Amino acid sequence: MENRRSRSIVLVVTLFLVLVALALGFVIGRGRKVPSTVAALDVEEPRGLPVEPVSKEGLEPVSTADISRAVDESRDNAIVRASRRAGSSVVSVSVIQTTVRRRSPFLSPRGDDFFDQFFRDFFPPLTYRERTPTLGSGFIVSPDGYILTNEHVVHNAEEIKITLPDGRQFNGQVAGSEVTYDLAVVKIDARGLPAAALGDSDEIVVGEWAIAIGNPFGFLLNDPSPSVTAGVISALKRDVKSMGSGGGIYKDMIQTDAAINPGNSGGPLVNGRGEVIGVNTFIFTQSGGSLGMGFAIPINVAKKVANEIIKYGAVRGVWIGLSVQDITPFIAQQLDIADARGVIVVRLEDGSPADKAGVQVGDIIRRIQGEVVSNSTDAQRSLFGAGIGDVVSLSIEREGARKDVRLKLEEVPKKR
Image 1 (spheres, rainbow, N blue to C red):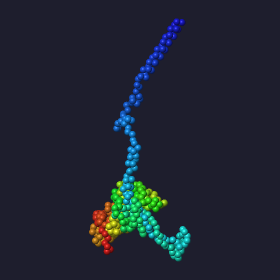
Image 2 (cartoon, rainbow, N blue to C red):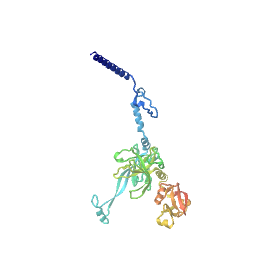
Image 3 (cartoon, rainbow, N blue to C red):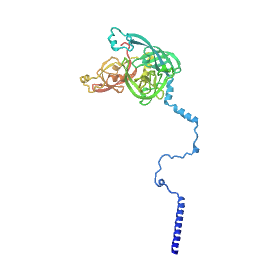
Image 4 (cartoon, helix red, strand yellow):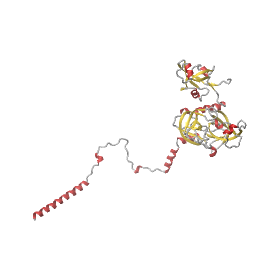
């Protein structure tokens, strides 16, 4: 009995000691700092600029005035500055044109093509003259009142009204025009006008900013202030066939996706510096509005035309003194010409610039102004915009040998 009591006492003491040991271990463990798994790994700190902790005490409060000032600075971007610089020189050109209308002598409001053709010889169409108001744009190129616009804007104009951005109106007179380039200069009796800054269209690059300024839908808006649309230069040196009755070709045009709408014709196309780089001329459209394909005449061409008109009243004819022909397969075979690209000189005028430069009949012109010439169309394109006094370089082939010549363009002799 006593042995059983002794064993019970020993068991109770043993359990008590175990519980005391566990309690001591728990208390000691809470006082130790156990290293984390990440800290135990040998991880390299990322390289770069050290990041300094910022205390809340170091932050300065931003005022409403500071925020407003920052917003104003961001709004005054390149497009805004360019529009401000060029906008004061953009004018509205209101024109009264007289057009000849024809209609069927019969009372059908829509007409009948078959009926009209059948009775045309017996009942000719009725013709009448109608005065039609049209609107375009232009920009001042000289402080003494010379304004550049498109020829089609002032074509057959009986009355021209020029409205400045400040609302002043002047009667305008066509100082001269050139259908070939679709450019015209209008003169108003004013002084001290803000002339536009003219840039260099040879420096244009595809993708740079393009800003079209003009007076689209001016009759509806009844506001002399010009409108601004922005885009980019989409392409350069575009040759576009005219849809008019003349069937001519617009050469070396600047293409832009800046919206050009009715009434923008004759207005400036401006770069990011506010310099005029082109004269807005026409668009491709199906609805009458912009489709993102507008075209402008390069300002370098327009400057030459404007200077000629202002100084001489017209664009003087340029004299080269030679005639060329495409190299057809027959000509190539007869003259044993291996490369049929280029044009061949078939006529030369005595004493002409070409004659003075040493060009001869039978020479094959391979390049003009460094540009490859494949046919007569390329030759005309290379000389487009050249004026009196300009020096033109030709790369010719004569009897298999290449030769470079330079000729200076002259005015067409008056007695020719």
